[in-house]
Image 1 (tube, rainbow, N blue to C red):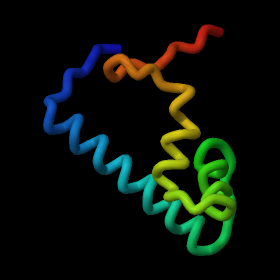
Image 2 (image 1 turned 180 degrees about the horizontal axis):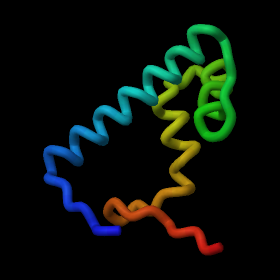
Image 3 (image 1 turned 45 degrees about the vertical axis):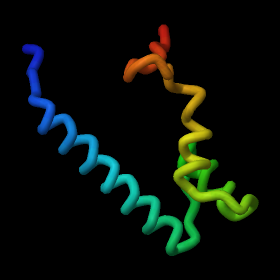
Image 4 (image 1 turned 180 degrees about the vertical axis):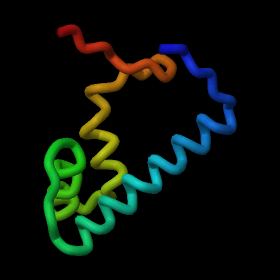
Length: 78
């Protein structure tokens, strides 16, 4: 498989569109009082218990998986 190079504009567009799709999905789940699993479910559950915004709770629930030096994610060894 060849390593495809994308331009910065394509990368930004992909990140923005992915964020919008996720936000729309979370909105649909929250508007119907449904729950999801994982970090999104934990953050949605936290919005009912705490007077905090979903975005802040979601970021705090996934921050343990990210490496804050640049944009690298922490690798998980198998």
